[in-house]
Length: 304
Length: 253
Image (cartoon, rainbow over all chains, first blue to last red; front, side):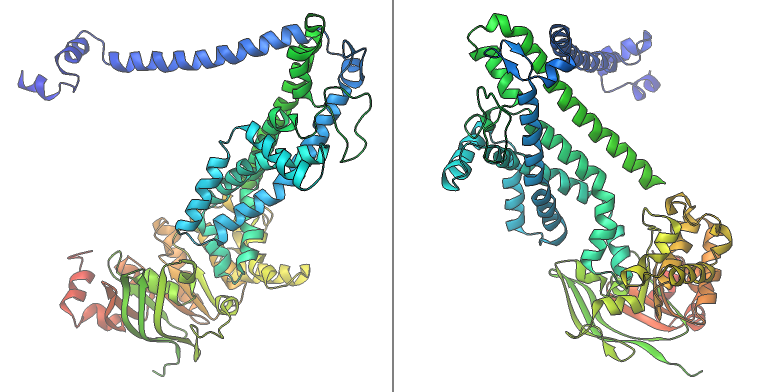
């Protein structure tokens, strides 16, 4: 009996009983089932969304659908103007946010002193990532459209989305830089490299996979945003493609919004809406997949 | 024996914020010799080693007072060029830290940051350094392989080669064999004995036998102070201080 008590689990008598009955870890079993159910729930939700959009959208997808302009009040034709608008927009977003984001992260992680001030800055950047995108949209109107007089245009919308992704790119780049072991920095400095040489030739190459992954994830999120471009340059319908940075444009997420809620004959254009959703998801998934592929490619290269 | 003093330390105090990690260190380190720094963990050996190439500068809270002269120049003087100093005073770390690059690029890293671009020159430096680090025969056919695929002992010899490629006078070693097996350790120790012909070597070690085997002089650190310093043989047979004897014989660590 004393021996039995010695080996009895914290679960007490019940657990002890179960153990003797041949249920060594009922609690663990229950927890495991719960965890597994949670995971299944997530997968089921994602699967359902994909299945719904795919099954209803795949019928209208064709080369023609992607590369043709919308016709007859957007009840016929394709979505080329929206696809191209989103591509342009994404490029501007990348140009606006990647260099500043990476440089800011390098400064914060490598050069800035570790004091209360930098902690506040870092906290603010984290918080900016949580600001609702509509707020960025209004800010974009105030700053780019009005104050800088860029008007409602590709440039205004791209810069607004750039601001939106900036916190994400800074944070992701900083995490990537942080994960580079200090021995790479010290090793290079001890050989007489200057700080910038050490960062450029030894720290950044190691952090690059993480930085690139963060960039692409941030930008792919921006590609799907509607609210920030709503007031800054996206158009309901345009008969021509954007010709310059100051043109207005159509974009996939906004087009989808219109096709599913604003169009005069919603029932009729529903297939087009699903097709648009599918193209948008395809675009975002492609970007995310390429982020993953790039990361594994670089990781392999690092390991040699 | 005539000694030539290469490193001279006078009244060195070092603070991490308010904590004083080094207290009034005075030391003379001779050239073409191996000087071992021994003492229990946290006693300031590594901190002291890192004052010799100013690697402590990287830590914001560090404050240093006193003089450290190498070849007669005070390295904490405002006019001191830290890059030139670190070129002259190389360092091998506790854990082998090859960069995630090829073997060749690891050794060529130092020369390249110092502006050598010519392939022929770099080839020559890489071969010479790898030979000096007793690694050439093992890697000469695989120079373009990743350094991370070498064994731990080979990685550490690569790190030594990388230091030698810069052409230093002084080589600092911070427990260079603590992460290695006995055979790899022996190879490094053999290498240290060879290298001391041409370099001034300062080595931090936790291994008393290692200090006895490779060093000519030994300094015993305790709580940020140098308790005793002198010829290794004398110190290990007739320590002056009871605490030195207790440490060497393993009564505390």
